[in-house]
Image (cartoon, rainbow, N blue to C red; front, side, top):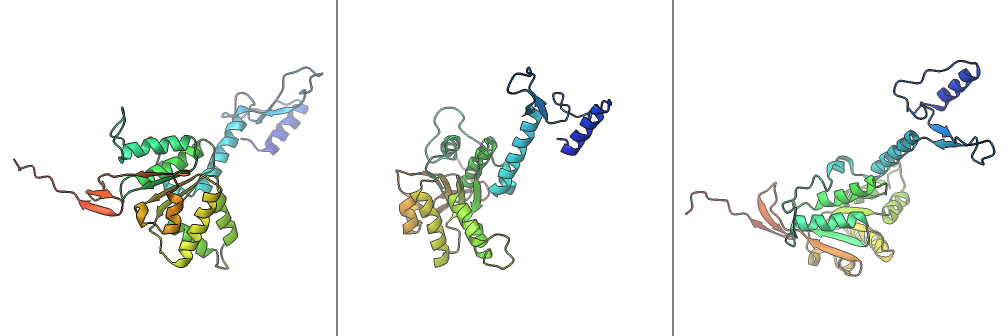
Length: 271
């Protein structure tokens, strides 16, 4: 998009009888001006009015998506999408408690976030990928979403008490508490101090009372979660609990929430 000053310069040249040469990469519709005039008669109310060219609309949309990405806190997790998730079952109904079944639930939730989605299971079962995919899907659709790892959230809240902090505690707390879609990753891995428990409860209790869409991942089983939070995560009227069981690709073990079962090495010489 050209600067306003350059466009005004072209206008002055045109008034002087000179025809400016548009840049080689200029939009073929507006020739780099960014705006068009309605082609109507002088008695039409729209005569002389400017309308944004489609190149301007696209540029504004790109900038809006860029701002959403910056605020989302996704960083490198922008690569984690539903398309990049490896599925084993592409047709028919996948078995329950499998990553494929969780993918379908998360994909449906991303289309129309409503209530809470709780993904639980041990490490390496795809929870973070699916949670990030929800956030990325919403951002690509032009909707805000904030993704944050729970221990990082608490560290950020603590850091706001520093005199050098660029954001106040109230600003950060309110942003997380009231964002239209919040994704909290790795609930249960934070240091369980009374302060940390209270902050998490305040955030989730507010979102529970206002029914704000929230995605939570945890490697704990529901029974292992702190009782006050468990009562909200387990409310079937608001929250959908999805357990994921799978082989951890990184460790080669079979996982269940709160438990780990060693995978028996394959013996190719057994009869």
